[in-house]
Length: 329
Image 1 (cartoon, rainbow, N blue to C red):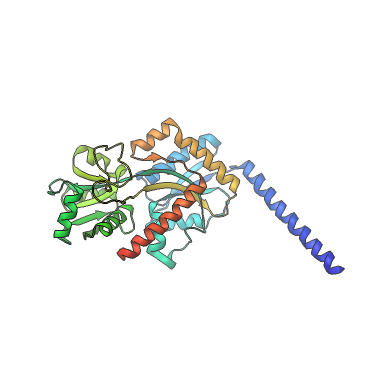
Image 2: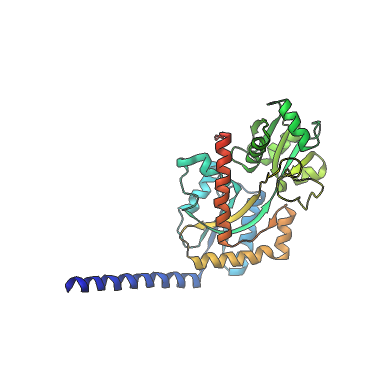
């Protein structure tokens, strides 16, 4: 009899605690945000990752009448900023700008990564996507993907390519290209897009993939020559430039994505609120233009869509890293 009473009391206590926890989360979501929110950008100022953080900060601050600050936390191939958010309280007051390299780090670092890329984060919104463009120095006697492949196969290791470092989207774009075409080019990493593009213009490197926003000015000025873009469809910014797939490498695609995440366990009501508000912000005419001016197309996904995309990207780039035996340089 006593055991039955004890079990009944335990069940009642458990139910009460569960209801209290749910009520607390609901109340928390209803008052959110009631103090400053932080957006961590795991890069130095400049570039679209920083732009995304600052647009989001600017618009949410006005909408919430609450301070939303951007903190740039570069270093460790973005792992420093990522880990900071992974270990932050799951209360909706810390967000992380996450681009494509986020999905590459598990394969590059393995057990040395100080967080779990899936279990420690709650995707909020896939904000937008850009393409990479394959550009060559102007005095290289190659003017098409076919000519590039033919030359590279006849001269293995003679061409070199620049990138912004191991695991960057431009590095992986070339590794995927080489794997699909059976070619071999020599990798020359730089500390950022600006020096890599400068080396290409100066003839110190032969070719490189880069985010359209980073190299758009040089392409429009004719300082370097575009061969192809990496999306499934042509870029509206360079409609005369073919995709890599249509130029001779069927199935090739690299989607350079940008989004925001929160620590895992953040109340769903807060995640959904921020998602819906940011989606409205990104789809506004003004912000869409600001994205487009930097070569980025608005996506504004649901949290579930962003989560599924990240998992898919982790699997895709994990295979590329393994097949190419890519190491941190």
